[in-house]
Image (tube, rainbow, N blue to C red; front, side, top):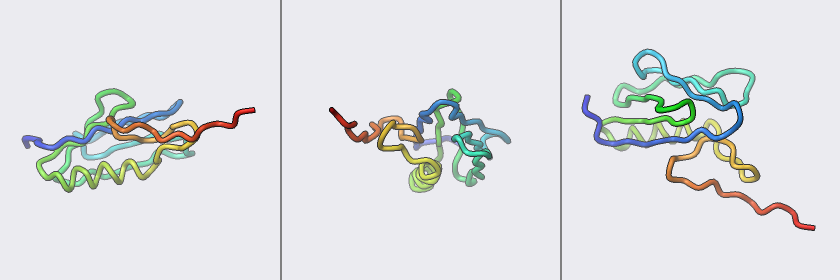
Length: 101
């Protein structure tokens, strides 16, 4: 399969990690929960991890690639106070300003 569309995700947070198994058919995420979050990758999408904190979703159907990347991101959206979570690679975490005294 020749991938034409890519979506990169960045996992930000202490101890947050991603890994793939079964030739990119399963994605496992450690996101600070008591269990690993598991995703079954659709047939039109391939997933691989460039590092333990960078996920690449690739495929020939743009809609399915972006839909799967959005589903992965929604498992732990970025927090507004310290920016931990899953972000798109080109996304800047929207942070709230802290209290000033």
